[in-house]
Length: 276
Image 1 (tube, rainbow, N blue to C red):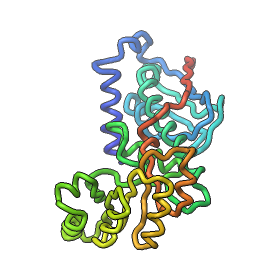
Image 2 (image 1 turned 45 degrees about the vertical axis):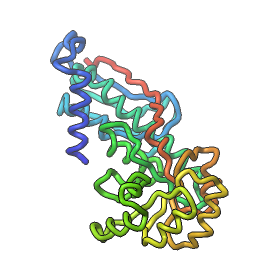
Image 3 (image 1 turned 30 degrees about the vertical axis):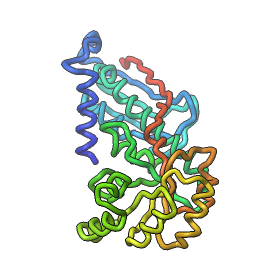
């Protein structure tokens, strides 16, 4: 995680600072300053490590004192942290650091709302691979901070046999059999669009069936037909208004792409002050 974070932070700083911050050089190189981050709205905080890494890349001696932890619920007007170090580093790193903190806090906040809608149902909230480019690991972490669970991280750590895989392989049975022969210890999930395809996935020996765009009535039928033989994941268009009702059908998981795809950054304020 740390190596990936370092790559992402350095890329983000290069994107913003490039060959050098033309405005930051207006202050003396030796000047040390203090800054504070405040929240302007209620949220779930996430992204401290990415925020810290930005400033510590620019100034290894930067001191950052946090008053909250990732996963904490914060209020409007709350002071989140105090920074002290190079004034140039504070000026140059402000936007990049806030971009990480605001975006990941937005992901965690959205996830917390969805997770609360599922409390008491026994159904787990999953994310998807619909993440912002370069921020896959960070957003997956934010989902966990918000109370959700991670689906596969990428194509390399899980098997999800989708419609196009089935079409290319010839059938659900063939696709599952091939996957099982190659990856004996890896759970195999199959995307199904009908109850007939669900039965094929069961017969083929899949571990999980992804019920793609099933209606609430369809989910009830699928749960009854499955009778506990496979784990069931519901996916496709569920939001806060329908999430709990879908969970009460008895599915094991509901995956929601909006957790990481429809991100609204949390409004945070970075306030700067010189220190004698």
